[in-house]
Length: 321
Length: 293
Image (cartoon, rainbow over the protein chains, first blue to last red):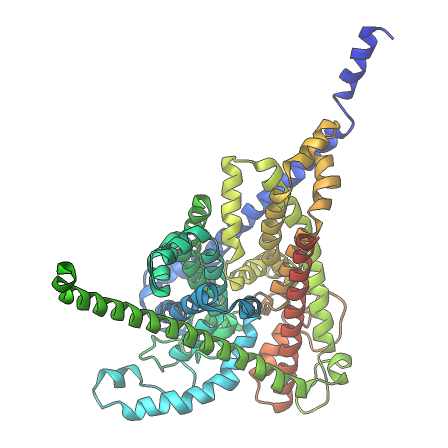
């Protein structure tokens, strides 16, 4: 064989038959990734188009009025919007200290033998479908809550006091506060598991040197490990908030489904998600459907902002470690 | 000696500080333990009522008979089958799209701007409210075709599963050692061939875990099915029409005024929770395996 013949062979081999297929494969993969973007874009566009008739008809009044009346076809979404924000905020305030406590317990205090079972249990519970939480809230939690919390509080409230204002309502166990508590229980395992994962990324040397300086457990957590994962922790909390904002089933069961502006913590209310879930298939007029889709658009915007911020913070935290 | 006699006040101040720190620490520890106890109790309470209310309603009829009219004997067979069918179809769609998208992100996107945008928005989609996905699929597939269908339900579920699968595929592929790719390239194979024959195979267990987690996530989803698959009282394998499914049946039966319907709702909730927990445990077991060996 001549030298030329030898060098010819590899030149032919540099264009293997697979090269063409490789292009196609890359194209298909790229299309799939783009389909993801298209989904999100399509979601936004379809909500906007579907909700536009309602937004056009009611203008700003859609956001400021709390009259939601399918009979006269007048829709103001202030009630559900406020309900969504209030329940999610209360849920977060209730859930955050508990989730933090669980995460700190698991990373700092828990005996090694119990650490894995409890950690696994918490993670598994994060996956329980929300409809189960909703059913439990309606059938088990609500009667107990009415009997042991609502009634005594309403009895104890002096006429005209702040407590009375907060506790006006029918003590049937459902309402804004009950929904918030169920939401809090639902996002608890998720937040606890995420916080725990974050805290585990703190290098052992950092923790140990803090203990070595004589810091107590509380001081190690509060001034060393928690600040170390600050950005990620805020992201995890906001992910929890995002879940609470968009949660449908757990809330629909127990919030009472009244459309007006909620007057007190025990009053019936509604959230955006629960309103859509309850009324969409039974919408009586095109305007009604449009108003519900416009509500969906509002929810999309709120959750998108929260989730985007959460992901940015988590991502920055990941980059740093 | 002079130092010692000069510092009793300092020593007592120090002692007070130590005491304060100890108390703060004690309070912190008690708080953490108490709060964990409360949380575990609440969650155990939920599982307990699920078991105690659900097991009573479980019998052979649940699996063999269709959803009953109030007062008559029936089960959840149509809903169980409908749910399984829809979830399977959703998983097929989601796996194709999710694995390909994840592969693109891990192997082709690199540090490109477009890649990081897709990655970011996929993360946002990962926890987007499921009811909005339901609305989207309604305007996309239900309104134009003038009818609720199991197919639309499957698409809605698939949209919820895709981000999970994309994410886990990307993560597991990125974990594969670069030497695998280099070895393939050195043999003259194009990247697509390496991905399909080497990387996917070595990332198998991670991708399987992701698929199972996605399956666990969608099998309990209710909100998006309310206005896509709707419900169907009868047994049907035809996904072109409204299809019965466990979550929506549970929702309707739980909110009804009939005791036998509520019993079925609890039984259904127990089935779903058991399925989700089972699948999640399986996924964890698979994820653990390679680390042990």
